Image (tube, rainbow, N blue to C red; front, side, top):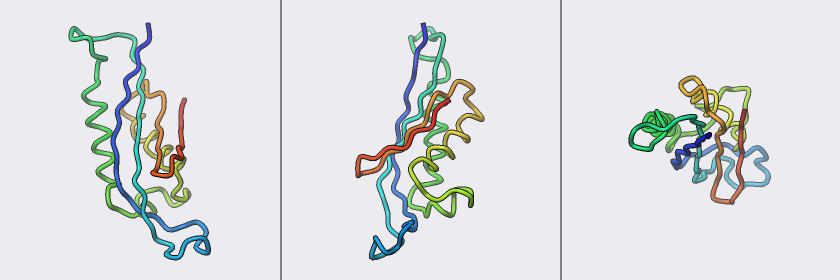
Length: 118
């Protein structure tokens, strides 16, 4: 049987609009939600996926880097600040510690969602 664990965190951040003509102030903010999903083959003695606490902690540490900061100062320069580029960045960082990372989703207050998966 395959189990999945989803860790969820939120953060507020800002970025420069891709098309400044569409936004009166090109620097503006959003409220983001992040879901990271890891697959597990086995549960521990307490019925929890092994490593579940560390997933929550790792996601919280990454989100702390983004909270109330400008996205362009965090993301690699080759990526504009989009939902998908944020998800890709978080996926790459989390995958370093979680070989069974399945996906990372980033959503905003508009209801849009960017997703990166294996």
